[in-house]
Image 1: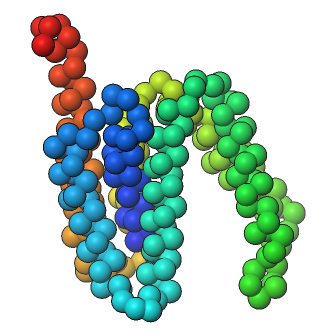
Image 2: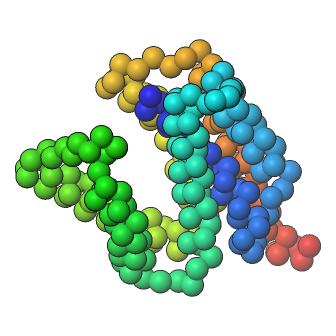
Length: 215
């Protein structure tokens, strides 16, 4: 379900917290961030626990794939923040071209059954404009601009909204009904992100104060 996928994508800010401590100077993993990480990760464990087993079913494999993608996205934020500053348009162009090259072999192979679906020229062009130009191209430019002006931890704030919007739109648009255990998992994930980000904001306020007082 899209709602479950949205909750699983909350691993992204937790990944940023862990990786930024190792890869970025000035990004510290204090006690508040660590507590937030543990709380948020426990929510993901609760979400996955009912379907864990051996051999794993198709559902849990899909959930692990979403977790892997979201964790990779978090790592990408940290790596991009550590790169030398580039023009956001140049950075976006590089990312979009590389992504197209990576996905091209899979597109040429097609689906496992050999069936290829063609939506028609109108739908294809509309998808290219909306998803390619706006949701990917323009969004990448904005993404790299904001990342250049802020921190990796700030970029992780966007994931406050993803689980909530995914649950809301999944219910209203697709008629999805979440399993009972998804609700405590969602609360733990949001609580973990909130604790971690609250700790980051407090630390950011303390640094200027320490500089003014000489401590």
